[in-house]
Length: 214
Image 1 (cartoon, one colour):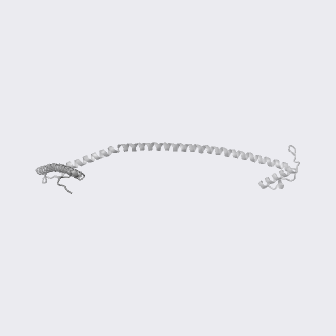
Image 2 (cartoon, rainbow, N blue to C red):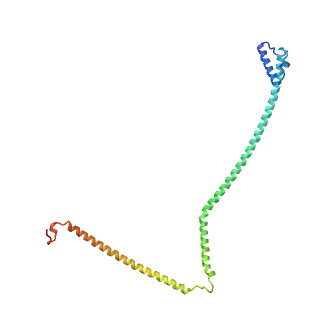
Image 3 (cartoon, helix red, strand yellow):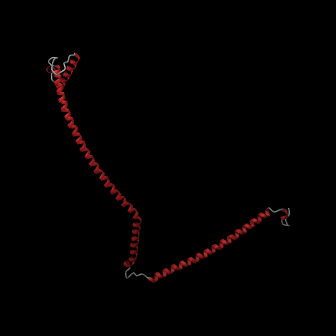
């Protein structure tokens, strides 16, 4: 076995045989076909090592290919995610702009709401006035005319009644003032009597009238 290290110790040989046995189990090859005697055990181990190295090289190539594929897929996924995020950001910006525009319209509508209501009420009042003005012209026929003289008399009677009520009110107010003045005089007279009674009640004996006797 030129070029190889001769295994001399039993312990190292046992380790080699253990590795050969493991390889035989993994490959399902009978161990006796791999190792005929202890002299060629190292040669068999060298063959196994070369085969393992070839498999490792092949495995590394596969792993490198898988790693490259994963990087490519990751980059593709990253680009896809970036495009998706960009699209979502654009949609969010568009929705935000539309929401701002809608909010502006709502603010303007709230600002113009009182004026719009006032205009509607004014228009409604104008329509009511137009209906009131046009209603008599549409409803009055030639056989049912307005009695202007009667209407004047009714208005005059109401005015006279109002004047009479105003005069009566003035008279009543005058009577109320007179009654209040009379009430004030009676209050003054009552107060004087009370003062006089109190003075006579607490007056000394010599202040009694001459005809008074005990």
